[in-house]
Structures are given as structure tokens and as C-alpha cells.
Length: 216
Length: 254
Image (tube, rainbow over all chains, first blue to last red; front, side, top):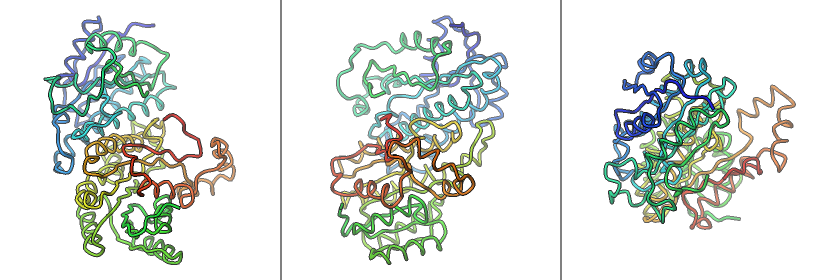
């Protein structure tokens, strides 16, 4: 296994993105936070350091975490909380290719397990999570022969919240959690450096949710 | 055979391929089918085909990427027939089968895929929800195995198909208490794009059919249509939030 030199982390302007960056730093990874306008693919490409050998996309926009009856979602919110989120990851994926191809590096995307299970009143978050997860898998397939690996980690939606006990998300957590309590920060510290370094794995999803989702 | 008597079912992308096959299969089982088609002529052809088989169908020219056209179509169906029991969203971008390198994708690429495959899920859900609740109906989205596994050649198509699945699973949970079922169907079928590819390469069909345990690609009317009919029927009254893969055993990951 090779050590990861420089890791660019996108999403550090969001609470979970900061948590991911902290976990990487505590694991000894050199982190460069890339906090730019992800709506503009040109800006993203310019902002990404050329010597990057790993990219982590950890942007879970708080707008996606607001419970909302789907039929009450207005078109502007639909775009902001769903399609825009997918476009932003696309821009990061596109911008990452050159540096990752040079370094034969790796990318990890954070896609909450709600995309795998669905949740009432979080339909846009689920659509984003699943869309991003499969965009990452498609990139993994397309870039495999360039030596680039792309994997996914999936935290529970409850670990994305300011208040994990927020009763509005009761539907997103069903049944007993096998590993309870579950320390998602410790999991990030262990799993992210591994996924960024290993050459043996690509296009896989690793749930970091205490084994609540075991369907994969 | 599954019975859909007295059901009114809206089908998008019904002018050809899988959508046409589903529309014909639904009508054969007694449904009155509202075809949403991009070009009026293709809708007229399918209506004529359904009528000749003894079924009922009406065609609505509708660009599903235009919310106003979608709204007008839904209002016309509800005004003329009084209800919508089920929605089948099948329409996909015309660029679906074109190979795409991630680095070459631009805003127009995203718009092509999202405006036809994903965004109409949002609009159709909003526009038909009341009718579906009143009828304890169903909402069916044609997705793809690419939306589960990803596809190196079709990254945006795969993304949109996956987003549809996340949406469907959530709507199934959200709408279940109101009696509305929401599912996905992932077909492997002979499509117009595949037929064109086969015309260019005579060995293609045999090669790709060899990958399918049942030895052939699905027929839109006789293989895919019945599965859609099942998911729209009372026989599937305990099925929601699922993706039914109809692929002759080609895909077994779920």
C-alpha cells in the first residue's frame, strides 16, 4: 500500500465535509481544502492543485437535509437540492481526472445510505446520494485503465445532522444498529486512508453506518 | 393475464421502443392508455396499433422536458377521462446510447439527460399525486441496471437512472401511507437504438444475446410490458419501493 501524498477535500464548507477533513488530518493525511464555487467547472479545475494524488468529495449540502414533503417542493428547491448537487460532483469528477491520471491516484465520494434505502421527506437527498454514488461508479469504470480508483463511503443520515436525535428523520433510521454506539469519525479515520491508498479496490461502496445497511 | 380494466395509465416516451411495448401491453390488459409522445405522428401510429388490437389509447404530443406541456397533458387527461390510476415514466434523452467521456460533458449534456429522464419524475409526481392518492394508484419509473452498476460509456445516463431509484425508494416510503405505490422497472430489451446498431453489425445480436442466460433480448411488448402491467395492477398491491430487473437473468446483483 502506498501513502497518499496530497488529498484535496471538497465540501469543507459543509459540516460533514469539515468532519471528513478533520478525520483525514487526524489520520496523518495532508489535506488541502478546496472551497470554491462548484457550479463552475472551470473554477473547480483551476482550484485543484496539480500535485494532488487523491480527491475526497464530502459535500452534503444542508439544504438536502431539510425534510420536505415532495409534492410541496418548488422548482427552485428541486434544482438547488437535487440537480445542482449532481452537477457539482460532475464538475469535481471532471476536474480531478488530469491530476489523478498523472498520479494514478484515487477518489472517494461521500454518499449517505439514505440513497440505498430511501426515506420519506428526504427524496431529494436520496436521489442525490444514489445519483452521485453511481456517477462515482461510472467514473471508476471509465478510469480503471488509467490506474484511477473511485470508491464511495456511505454514512448514516443521522451522522450528517447537527442533532443526530432530530425526530424529523425517524424514518431514515429503522431498527437496531448492530454496532451501537457507532463512531463515524473513527470509521472515517480508518477507512478513508485505506480507500485512497489501496490499488485493489474500485467502484465499491462501504457503508459507515454501524452495519445498519447490509444489503450490499 | 393481469387485469387493468377501467384503469387510466399515463405513459411517457410511448412513441417507440420500450414505451410503445408497455403501452400496448397495458391496453391489451384493459387499460385506457394516455400516450405522451414527443412527435404526434409516432403517437398516432401507436394509438392505431392499440386500436387495431381492440384496446383504447389517446395520444398527447408533449415534450416532457417542458413542465407546461406536461401540466397541459395531465390536465387534459384528468378533464377528459376524470382520473389517472398510474403513471409510467419511460422517456429518456435521445442521446442515451451515445458514448460519453466524462471530460467531454458540458452543461448541455446534463440538460439533455436530466430534462427528460429525471426532472419529469419531479413534475409528474407533483402533477399526478392527488389523482394517484384518490385512486390508490401507482407510479412506475423505467430505470436501468446502469443506474445500479454504473456504466463507463454512459456516465450521465447512469447518474440519472440512479437518481430515479433514490427518488422512487423515498417516494415509496413517503406515499405508502396514502396508498400509492412507487416502483422502478429496469428492462433489457430490444430498442430502436439497438436495432440500428444491429443493422450496422450483423453479429452484434448473437454476441450480446450470448450474455443473457435466457439467450435473447427482451421484447418490449411480450417481455417488458407484462412486468410493467403487473406493477401497475392490484396484483402488485404489496410491492413498493422496488426495482424489478427484467433482463432474462443478465443482471443478478440485486
